[in-house]
Image (cartoon, rainbow, N blue to C red; front, side):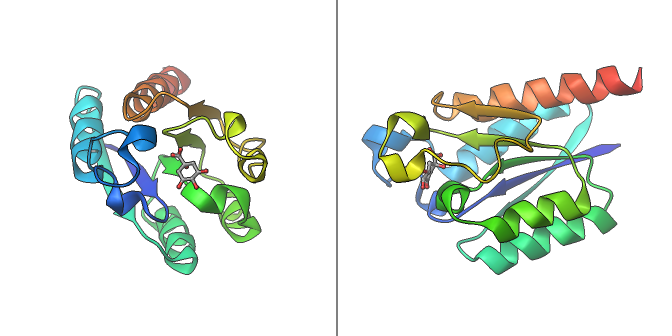
Length: 149
Ligand code: DQA
């Protein structure tokens, strides 16, 4: 059975109450359950992990390699704009991933315009709110299935 890792970075544990006018009203738990339910149609198992700590996200990416995780759905949150270390971790494990954002960082403050992930991601889904996680999950599932058929 294929397994995807749904990885979320800092402050996303506060979804639902965090700036709802920007990030929406869905909680992270609701999003995780929706992604799990969406991918169960494809018989894909989903592991979920959120952390506010960069080193814990790096370690979760490292262990994904040993666990033979097939794909990572990743919202790096503020680390998008700062973390060479998370970029290097993804390159080190060589697991394909999609970069997800609820908002469109490119239409926000200039310090959000640069991403350390977009040029190495299989796909970038941004600006679609919580629905973006489901679109990213569906696209990744279909691409994985097509690659093995
Ligand atoms: C975010 C966008 C980032 O710029 C921001 O720091 C976040 C959330 C998004 O999902 O829109 O924390 O990744």
